[in-house]
Structure formats: C-alpha cells, structure tokens
Image (cartoon, rainbow, N blue to C red; front, side):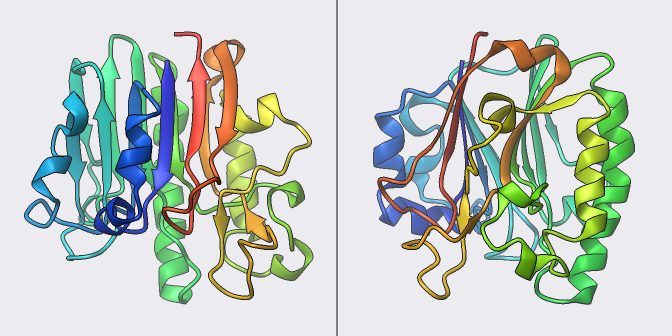
Amino acid sequence: MKVITANLNGIRSAQSKGFFDWLTSQDADIICLQEIKADLDSIPKELFNYNGYISEFHPAEKKGYSGVAIYARYKPDNIIIGLDNPEIDSEGRYLEFQYGKLSVVSLYLPSGSSGEDKQQKKFRFMEYYMPILKEQHQERDFIITGDWNIAHNEIDLKNWKGNLKNSGFLPEERAWMTELLNSGYTDSWRHLYPDAPGYTWWSNRGQAYAKDVGWRIDYQIVSERLKNIIKSAQIYKDQKFSDHAPLIMEYDL
C-alpha cells in the first residue's frame, strides 16, 4: 500500500504548480493532505473524486485557513471527521479513514510560531490528543500521516542550536513526541533511516530550500505492530509544490 502525505499550503496553489499532475503518476492508494486552505465551495470541482479516488475534505470554518483531506482508491468502511473538540475541529485538523482494523489519518497539528496564543493552542491540542493516541491503538492499527509541526530530535532540523527556544523544537514538544513514540508508535522514516535527516519543510527566508536548511515536521507515525511492514520511504523534491515536500511511503499491506 502506497501512502502519500503532503502539506499543500493551499490546494489551489498546489494545483497551479502541478501537484495533481504529478500525483497522477504516483499511483498511490491513499493521499493525505494538510493545509488545503479552501472551503468546499472554493475547491475546484475537478478535485472532488479526482482521478477516480474517493475523497473527503474537512476544511476549517475560517476561509483560506488550515483544513485536511484524504483521497483513497478504496471506499473506507467508516470516516471520522474531527476529534470531538470544538477548538480543534473548527480548524479542520483531523480526518480518519477506517478499513477493517486499520485507520489512516490526515493530521495537521497547529503551529505555534506566530505568537504565544498560538503556542498555547498547540499545547492544548497536544494535551487533548495524547490520551486519545494512547488508547486508540489498543484496538486498531494506525497510520497517522501529516504535518505534526514538531522536529523531534537534533537530526530533524539543520539549525537545531539556533531553534532550542523556538516553536517546533521546544523541550515540551520534543518530550511529547518522545512520549508518543514510547507509547506504542513508530516513526516510519526514522525506523528505515536512523541517520538521514529527511527534511520536509523549508522556510521561505534566506534560500533555505536551495541550501537544504530544513526541518522534518511531516511524518507517517504507525502503530508499533506495523513497523515491520514499512517497505520504503521517499521525500519528493524534484518539483516544488509548496513549502513542504511530499512524504511517500510503502507498506506491505
């Protein structure tokens, strides 16, 4: 099973840059998108059930902000929209497709980089989500894809020394990710590539992309039971559709 996750920084913007043309060549089974930045009335009609995929969109209430989506080759048994939390769900941050005992999630954790109020919102999300993460995988297997907005360890960002006090690499955020991975989940990329940075996001400042001064904040986190079926992982950088790069993974499912 081939799963792609990509933060598009606007679904219409990514479409104009050729994202969906590229996607056609990928023959993915499931595509998880974040930061679609469009309500249902603003999404181009051709992107609904694009290329024969089953599609579901969970936009934010605020226009041009946040939002997640999933395209799937096969119809899910069940779709879960949101986490039953008004603050989180009003911003379109969680979408889950269920297939038997397997769940595939498109997740967009808040960024706290634009101010203390945003950071506190991020912490509230993390506090609310952790008990769910710990409980949910007892009964089901999960592939949780998306933009987590946290670089876990020093290897996960180029300039880690300069970001020790910045959102995305705060001690509390890193400890939260450690707690997650100690509670029955595996970081798929790091499982395959212990020593490869695997950056997926680059600032628009200072030629960060050209110089590969990046952060690894897009993940596919899987239930521990699935770690031995992770077959391959790739970060696609040949074309630039967004400030994030697509993360492509294959599972023996």
